[in-house]
Structure formats: structure tokens, C-alpha cells
Length: 111
Length: 112
Image 1: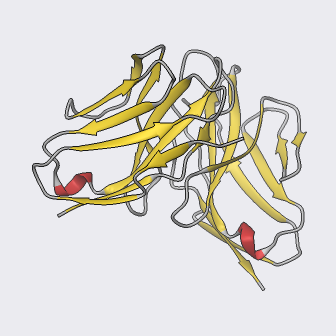
Image 2 (image 1 turned 90 degrees about the vertical axis):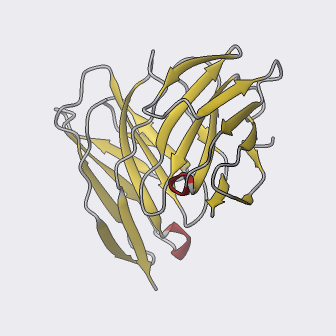
């Protein structure tokens, strides 16, 4: 699986959009970009994933650059409950079960 | 619809002992994976079970073993516990190849 690079930590004001970047410059054509988050002492929570098109669901939006070498997770209206460690993972969907987690971005929402 | 459930939530064991952790996958899911998360680090893949067989394994010693039952539930066994085995053990499940993987809340293991 391709390696990802994320900032160690970020702050965001409550009610503002939180934009979390991820670099995955060695991503292969058949690798998806997944985002999970982990609130303190809980299991990782799936947020969103995509291959090359932008994706949106009830939790977030995922913007993938045209060359697929980077992506941004957007939480449109951050709340205090969004404070967590956010993991960006690239994964081949077929034939490889493993999710390779890095150290993630610790996002703190400021009241 | 219950998500991935794990038991016990917390346990304390002594060095050299053996431990068994249990997991029930999300309803309809047939594939189970186990991860170890040490304090301050991201989860590390241990192994995956499908059709009651280990299909993929991470870089963990043979002291770590598992089992999947016909109802798709799974157990993780760790023998000869070391202090370094203290961690959060996460179970994850999915249905079908390539579908989204969902995690349970984990079992906290402390080895003293």
C-alpha cells in the first residue's frame, strides 16, 4: 500500500470548515483513499472513501486532486465532537485486507 | 443493526499467561480482521479470517493466533503474554471483497 503523509496536528474553530490534507504521491491507479477517525479510547470510525472523483456523504466531503497525489477531507461545520485523530489510508480494494494506519492528524476543535 | 461487538472491554493479565478476546462482526459481515494499537500509535494489522481460515497475516509472532466460527464470530488468542502486548485490540469486519471495513470499540489488555 502507498504511504501517506499528514500534518501531526491542526486546530479549527467550532462552526468553521475543517480541511485536513493528505499526501499520497506514490498512490497506484487501483488504490482507493480512505479516511477514518478515532475519538479518544474508541475504535476507528469510517468516514468516507474515494478513487478519483470527489465524494460527499452525511459526515464529510473528500476532494482528490486530478493527479490523485493528494486529497483533502472537509468537515463542513466542525463541532466539539469532531475532535479526534484522523487517518488517511490508501488501499487496494481487491486482494488486500490490510489497512495501514500512519500516525494521523490530531484535530482539535476550539470553542 | 448492531455494529462490531467485542468482549471483554478491559482486562488485566500477568506476564506468561494466555488471553482470549472475542468479536462478533457487524450483521451480514463474513470477514473479520484483528488489529493491535499500542498507546500513541496507529492500529497495526494482525490477521484476517474468512471462511474460518486465516487469509492474510501481518508481522506478528506465532504467539498470536485466531479462529473464526461458522457464525462468522472470531477469537484472538495470545500466548505467553509479554509486557509489550499491552494495547487496545481492535476487531474489524466487512462483507465481500473490497467493501468498507468497520471497527469495534476494542478490548483494552494490560499485562503486568
